[in-house]
Length: 202
Image (cartoon, rainbow, N blue to C red):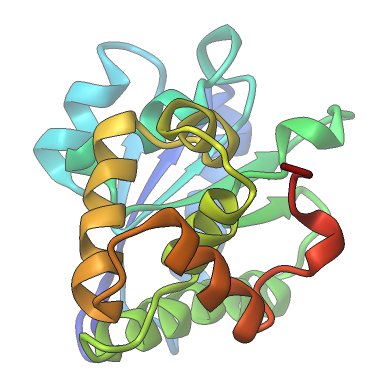
């Protein structure tokens, strides 16, 4: 998402009333450039997202019966997409923890606008990071490595594919020039990414 480019938003919601209401509200936000795509539940969601590559997917966590966010985030073709939970009813909060943002039926246009702007700004910061600067995700992975988690455990914890975890580890080693778990553990402690008490006892 670039500041001068439209935010490409896909809305996935089975209820036509809720879906159309949200789309109408998004169009009402005049100071944001938005391109909207509508997903009603027919067809393959992943194929649609790969074909149209939106910047943001606003989706009911119960879309299609249950939306598997971890599986979707593990797809390298969809790695840069932001995921926003559309909360339409009571839902277990643990299902929302891995979303980048959440909106509800009670949000007004100002709140909705602020959340979308925040997502856009986070993306801009990420794109401006230099090669030497670690991303938030890379810091999370270093913390996991310091806790002696395996690639599989890291992938499950962060809702990523193992391939994505390995790619991140390769990038971390290239940026920091640290190639061992012990070295990354020392880095994590020195940079306050983890405390000694959080390390596994050897």
